[in-house]
Length: 140
Image 1 (spheres, rainbow, N blue to C red):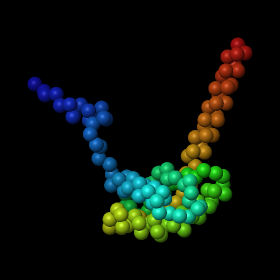
Image 2: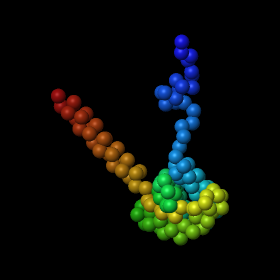
Image 3: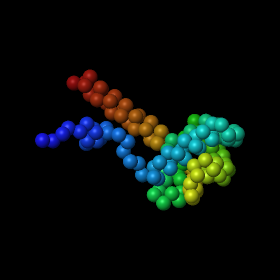
Image 4: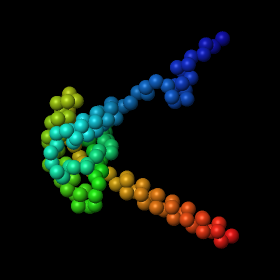
């Protein structure tokens, strides 16, 4: 006779308790949270107004942290935000070292996240396809 175990059932369908995350993904999440708070509260650079962090990628060896950001505006604002983030890189890394208490603090690399632009392009393509289908249905 088998005994029903609700925890085992929930785990088997993927909605059980906390699934164990890799250390690198936990560190990436902590870095993203700390830098977002830092951008809101401490950084006074006008080039960083409106900058938001979309994601952080950290390899398993925790050597670097690729920080992807977005900013409202055109290419000029993106370039200015990149320059501002590079200028604040040392300040941000020392803040992370103090708050996260890691043995080794990853080197920060800032990259513009163009996922938003790609999503907009895809939505435009899907809209064109939908419009073509409507016009074909109207013709027949």
